[in-house]
Image (cartoon, rainbow, N blue to C red; front, side):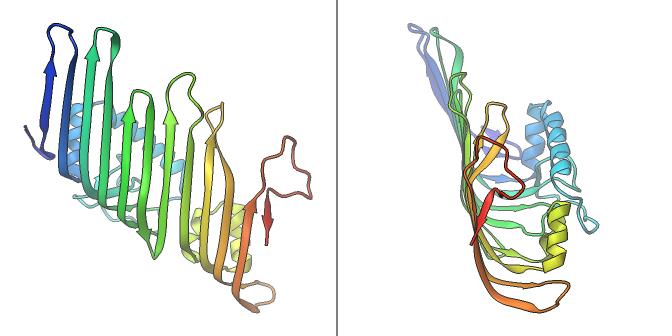
Length: 274
């Protein structure tokens, strides 16, 4: 079956008339992830437009506005949202595999979806670094959601990470992890920082390479809490604005302390610094 804007969809399946068990499997290999694919998805799922609008609002709340006038989005790139001014733009190759099965014993059909991403490129107008060589896997079934970022590079930095969530009432909390190696810190990142951190940034004018890894744990409230975060600084430089004396070849480590079951005092910090 040839789907316009997506490619060749291969289907297979069977239906046992005696047991009333059935299953349907399908795959699409080498699908170009572009805006034409998004328009096809919108035409088959009208509610997607509203969901993308919510995503636009979340991105606008989480990230600062673009620092320069944004050019019109590439007509080829897939917009992960509706706004060309804020939505991330993605290009890549997808291999899609899915299956669905049913039986009289199951009122809800069992389904699986797996998407492999290769040769991906991701850019966001508000973030000065674009990702390339993105390799990732997405898996979804009735009980779980798994995303694994196996590799991505941007401005000589390397990123990996993942997310696991379960949907059963008795499921364990979700978890996520990340590992960023040799991420460049310079003035381009200042707009992404909260106001207090921006003042520190202006006072010390830091530059260098930062490697950060850690996890996020989902709480009963649904919120996510960072844990076990460790950041290492290499090849750092800083110039304190009052003395204007440059410090070079800085190295250091910031380690997040375990959460205490009491509020921190004014002299305590959530991190230790070496």
